[in-house]
Length: 190
Image (tube, rainbow, N blue to C red; front, top):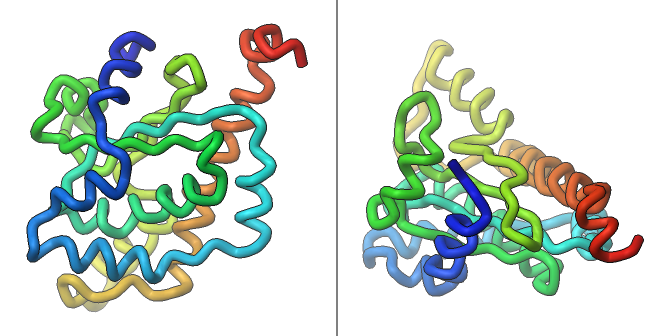
């Protein structure tokens, strides 16, 4: 079960994005930095994030070696940078935090990345992983189609932009859930 005390303590033990990425091996670190340079939020996306009024905590079960983590975690760092007062991102290594990984299995597997969204009190709100719908559609088209991609090939720009929007849509949904929560509305008298 993902109760608030467990999520709070795991979040406290987790690393901020930069510290987490720095744990990557010299072979993997350049992939993270390359992807970071490719993430660009639109003005509308930045305005949306800056309009948040409720804190959202995001805990990620990840692996610095994982291509899907490299492809998607930097998006969340961009979201956090757009509103660091209200969006808090922390990451844990899946293999070092088996207690979390075993509670967030997807299709009976310890997949990464898994994004756990919580409100300001660390109440569980949502879990999503290991890929967004756009990523799954693109992978299915490549793997189930007539040809296969070259391993490590860059993500096409249009797919990257749609994936950013997929994740932002989920973050907005979580924020609106927090914003409309009777518990939090009573707490903040709004």
